Length: 384
Ligand SMILES: [Zn+2]
Image 1 (cartoon, rainbow, N blue to C red):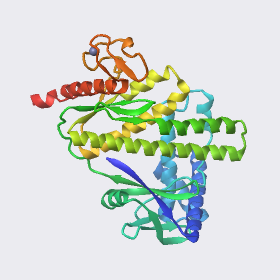
Image 2: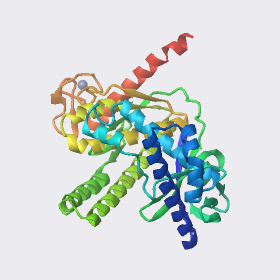
Image 3: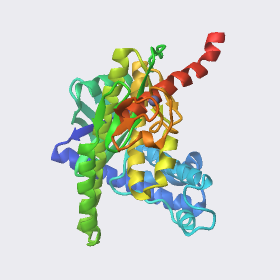
């Protein structure tokens, strides 16, 4: 499994100036190569190298390795764009959006992320330093901060290129780690996990993770956006962007913590984890409140993917189940009735009288569907 580890660099002012000059140079070079690619309709890495290599080395003062990275970055960006166009992600054929995307060359921001391979960047974990190539020469001792867990992961599994980027006044390196999955243990039952807005996650074990903190941050952010959007000034836009990132970071931290606890609960009890099929959630909720849901569905997907990779790392089985009627069905007798839900938080079966917190009831339904899904998908294993 591929994991990214983001570490913050702590450059001296001289090092920061060199990093800034470097990102500026490589992104200016990339924008230039991009214009050339667009102009001559040459998009493949190898072909572009023939057209651009000599000139970007001379004009932008890039080392051979860096020049090749610039060209590859441009080729990759166009490959992604063209794939998006093919898959209809940039609008229908003939639409203004699609025409615009194809008519103008890709432009790289001065601070856009740039890849560094092992020849341009080396890591000294014990010293918490990197040595990195810049247009002002090699910077041999740029300090970085990382948690003990991150350091250990970097030391054991880091592989390939790392991206250097500048964001909100800070420098980051984003490294990719190739972490081996643990073999999945045969589960002793399933822990059902229901995702929601009031409670972000609820397990069939009865643990509820409140969405209060996250919803408060979102609410404050929405208010601020309403006020700032009226202004339309540059500084208002900048502030909005900063707040959006801050909110996303807070949501990601919250999701990480919840995912970690859920996987720990499953590990401790020897259970697998059953999640609602997220595609279903998105489709159903979109019918009601289109605006708000994009945000929540994005966050649900993130939490789902955090749980998935933490489960894979821990060797915990994971299944996705059909979410239909999980909130209206009684987890004790199976009776389905909208009147089983007299209130947002309460479940009370009109047939057998079973009562439980509504989200816990839903999580219990998800858990039993998890058992069924696992049994079906592993019937072949048993037969073999
Ligand atoms: Zn019942």
